[in-house]
Amino acid sequence: MTDTADTSTNPVTDAVPERCPVTDLATDYDMFDPDYLRDPFSAWAELRDTCPIAHTERYGGSWLPTKYDDLQAMAKMVPVLSSKSPIVIDMPEALVDSDATGYNAAAPISADPPEQSWTRRALLPHFTPKAIGPQTEYTQRLCNDLIDGFIGDGGCDAAVDYAQQIPPRVIAHKLGVDEGMVDDFIEWVRGLLELGLQDPELRAKYRKIIRAFFAAEVADRRVNPRDDLITALCQTEVDGEFLPDEVVIGMCNLQLVAGIDTTWSSIGSALWHFAGHDDDRRRLATEPELWDTAMEEMLRFYAPVTMARNAAEDIEYGGVTFKKGDKILMNFPGANHDPDIFENAGEVVLDRQRNRHIAFGVGIHRCAGSNLARMEMEVALKAWFERIPEFTLSDPDAVTWCGGQIRGPRKLPVVFG
Ligand code: HEM
Image (cartoon, rainbow, N blue to C red; front, side):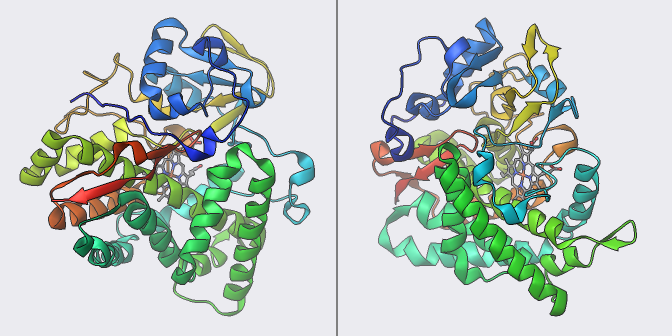
């Protein structure tokens, strides 16, 4: 079934007043253009045929690769393509919190080896399928409680009332912080990764708030250890030394940020798809053996995450020259639509057998939380389908998409039955 991009508007990006129209995608793509947010697929397809590594001067300049093989190769160009600054619009030095100077604010995602290697090693044991067991039971209960709250109303906002509510609680539960603060966590993460992407001042504000929050939590765990991930990280030794507070704070910051918008976007995109595609919805509801391949297909088709790299030196690749300091958007979502790799790449195929998608990235920075993310998606969608097998968009024009570096629906009104 071919995806039909919706025609919604995005209140965040539409509010940007002086947007010059894009006349040439190859030299002037606009990652915040409402048309691109609604339908990036056709832009990637055009670029793959005409200029597979596009460039724009907008937002400080960046490159956009669109082919699977290029993304695979670039992800391995470490450290010449550095991860130290993964947000495309840099924060001016003056806005960087002076308390934070000298620590990596979000290792391992914003670090290069060797710091990336030892911070990642410290994190991985906490995200194995076994280690996320307690979160699985918690997520099942949570999803059913959320559904209890709106099932009697005959409809809900599947993004706001459901998808958005799950990942912040799950990651708070895992970290061991107050789940009652979930609205704050949502506000902080949106302030950083959604509204703050184009507004470095806002991003600096929320970065400071998150850092102060985790600084207090880490200080507390040093004296009051508990059975939670913050305590476990405080007690982790590397080369015979406990991880410094600053590193633990950065890792907690990353988990909150990486764990929320991403998974919320994936759950929301899947619900958007099934609300608008009756055949696929009914097929999944009646053929439960499709779940595994269907989840991977949702991840492929609606991959939400595009982090950036910085060229650490002038470097030639694929017929273009990345100048030192240039930003490159790791367009994993675009790679997942490359017809050279995926048969019928532009169609959602629920029983796709060969699906080597890179929604979770590739190489040394491949998502450390992929087991948790997959579990949350599967539990959230299965709980929904079990209790609400029939649902449709109540007002397709009211759907809004957020994009830039994390793409997903932010308003998604649906009716049941
Ligand atoms: C469907 C949801 C998710 C998607 C699509 C996703 C995607 C990604 C991608 C593409 C990367 C690589 C970034 C790069 O190459 O620069 C990444 C890294 C990472 N993700 Fe996820 N992610 C998801 C959920 C999560 C969750 C729930 C967590 C848990 C806290 C998490 C933690 C991380 C961490 C720690 C890294 C950095 C790994 C490293 O740099 O070594 N992610 N993710």
